[in-house]
Image (cartoon, rainbow, N blue to C red; front, side):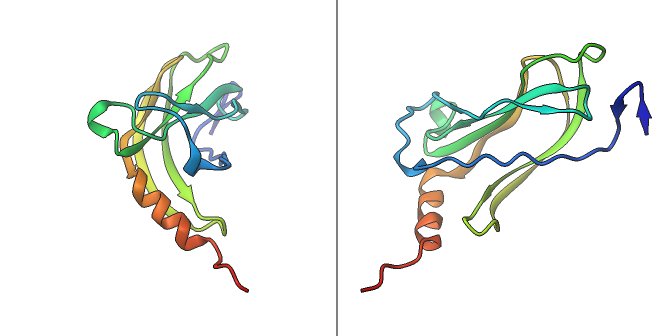
Length: 136
């Protein structure tokens, strides 16, 4: 259903590649920001991902925390109700870890996600398995 330029039950995918993630220097509570992306089907709203390699809070410092953040308002809607998935993908595109976030009301400059998405060490172990072994 489309009402005044805003779509209901539309889907989009945003893929963000982070080079040299295992060398991230951020401390607990410090994030890496994705580029801003625009979702045309939701009133051209602007969004980004916030990834905390060493966790968002002290109690989750051994985890990776990740959030979807709304950056700006559309002209007509100050809130959006959405359902989204956050996933880590392997080099071949297969899903390593995924979490479904239930519908939430997103206001301007608000974010939703998970503090304990996956243990930091687990991602590094998974990545080592993904890399081809050196051959002589």
